[in-house]
Amino acid sequence: MVVAVTASLAVAGPGGLSRVRTSGTLRWCGDLQGGEPYAFQDPNGGDRMVGFEVEIADAVARRLGVRAAFVQNDWQMLVPALERGDCDVVLNGLEVTPARMARVRFTRPYYRFGLSLVVRRADASRLRSLEDLAGHRVATLGGSLAADVVARSRAEIVLHEGVEEPYLDLEQGRVDGVVLDDIIAARYGTPRPALQQVALVGDGTYAIATRPDEGDLGRAVDDALAAMIANGELRRILERWRLWNDRQGDLRAAGADDPVAPARGLGAADLRLFLRGAGITIVISTLAMAIAVLGGLVLSLARRYGGRAARILSVGYVELFRGTPVLLQLYVLYYGLAPLVALDAFTAAVLGLGLNYAAYEAELYRAGLDAVAVEQTEAGLALGMSRALTLRRIVLPQALRVALPGIANDFIALLKDTSLVSVITVVELTKQMTITAVDLRGWLVPGLLCAALYLVMSLPLSRLARRLERRLVPA
Image (cartoon, rainbow, N blue to C red; front, side, top):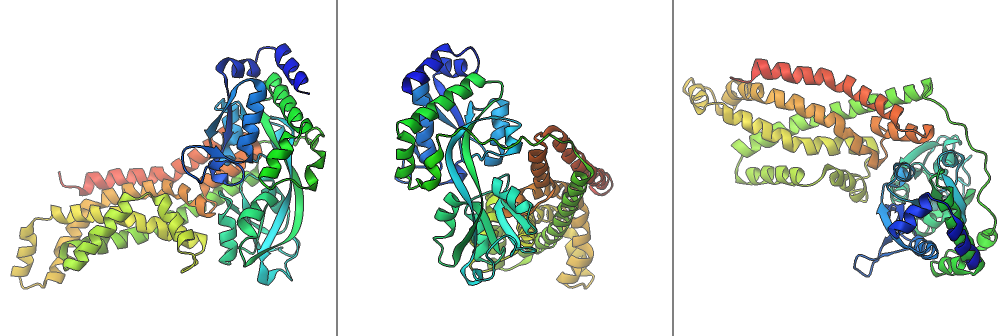
C-alpha cells in the first residue's frame, strides 16, 4: 500500500499536490477551541499541539513527503477558509454531510461516531429520546451534524460555539438536553455526575476535506489514509486516545455516499429569520443602552460628588469594564457566575452589554460635568438652592446637552456590538447571517443582506447624532 501511495504521488499532475510538495508544507485548518481529544495545546506546557487529529495530520503529511502545519480558524468557518485558500485541507472533526459534499471533496472516513443525547440524571427516566424533548430546549454545536438532527426534531434548538458550554447550560437548567458527537459527550458531558447519556440519535463520519478542483491532492491524501488503515497506524492512533471501538472496523470502506443536497437561494423564510434577528438586535441594544445611560449617570455623579469610597469604587468600575474585553465579560456573566446566578442568555446579553457601556457613558457624563463652569453651581447656591437642587436644575441639564451626541454615537456602536452575544447562544442578526450562510453554502448574499439591515438600523441614529452635535454642543 505504501508503494501505491508513492506511485500516486509520482504520477500526479500539477495542482494542489504540486503546490504542497513545492512548499514542503501541508497546511491543515482546525479550531483549538474544539479541545481534547481533537487538537489542543499540550497541557504539559510549551507550544506543542497534541491530539489524535494532530497525529493523523502528521502521518498524512509524512506520506506526502512534507510536514504538517496547523492553521487556526473558527470551526464553523473551516470550509470557507479552505475555499479562500487559507489552508490545503480541513482536518478537525469535520462531519461528512450532503451540504458540505456540495462544496468540498471528502476523503474516506478516518473516524465513525454516534450522536449522543445527554440529559440531567434526574430527568433520565422521562426524557429518553428527541421525541420526548419536543418543545424543550436542546443544545448543540452550531454548524454540526447534530444541529441538523435537532433542527429536524420538534425540540427548540439552542446553538453554542464551544463543546463544554452546552453541558454547563444543561447542568444549570437552561436547556433540557444536549446532542453532540459521542467523543465530545464522553469527555465533557457524562463525566459530570448530574448528567447522563440516554440514547444515540444518529451517526456520522469524520473525513478530510480538500478543494474539489484539487483532485490530485485529494486522491493523495485518500491514499495516505488508506495506507494508515492498512498497516494499522490509524488504529494505533485511535487506541492511544481511547477512541477505537466496534464502529471503526469498516474504515476500509470509501467515504460516505449520501446524496448531495441541491443548492438553493435566499427565500422568504430566510428573510423572516433575518428580520427576527434584527428585531432581537434592536431590543437587546435598546435595553442595554438604557442600563448604560442610567448606570453611567450614577457612576459619574458618584465619582464627582460622592465620598472617598464612592469615588474609588466608581473609578475602579470604569477601569475594569473599559480595560477588559466585553466578550470576556459576557463569558464570565453567563458561564462564570452560573453556579451563583443562572441568568438566561437574553438577560445576560442585556446586562453584559449594559454594564460594559455604562463605563463609557460615565466618562461622557464626566466630560459634560467638567464643561459646566463652576460659577453656575456657585450662582445656584447663592440663590438659596441646595446642592442637590442646583445639580438637578442647573448642572445636569447643561452636562447632558454636551454628552448627548456622544451617547447617540455609542448607541450606534452598541447596536453592532450585539453581534458578540452569539457566544452565549443568542441568535441575533449576525448569528442568523452565519447560520443562513452555511445553509446556502455562500456568504455574499447573506452578508450583504445583514449589512443592509445594520445600515437601515444605524443610519437614523447616525443622522440623529450629527444633528444633536450641531445643535447642542457649544461652539
